[in-house]
Length: 185
Image: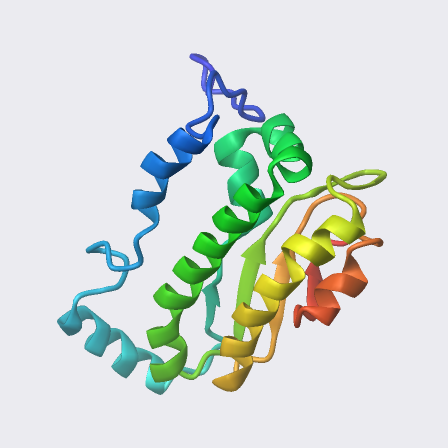
């Protein structure tokens, strides 16, 4: 945000995750049991009561895998890590998957949700930031775990928000259980 109030696409001065040591420190922030990740019991009961008789669709965010890592590492760093340190990227995506599933489990078990949404912004105007082969290897198995939890509790509309040309990745998202693409650009 500029001093005159204008804003633009963020330009990062530094990223919190540059090395595996940075990841070891950062990953403690991804503990599903961290207080505040879920409403306290009184607030949760009130929300469930409010939502039980609603006349509108209700959804839940199920986060991001590649998009969050890209934001924390920078595009170049995550692209290099996928090629040079794939085990590390698998570990980070496993941790994110565990966090997402752990945090949303109670909500999908106790509330009748109509949809879930995720964000990935991982495509340019000409195609994806990672190859379909890499997407299948790194993301499809984890997305299937997330969508399986949602589907098991009746939440069968799963939306991904991804900018750019998603044509190469759309079949893989569908394979993984994502069935709405937003936006189509």
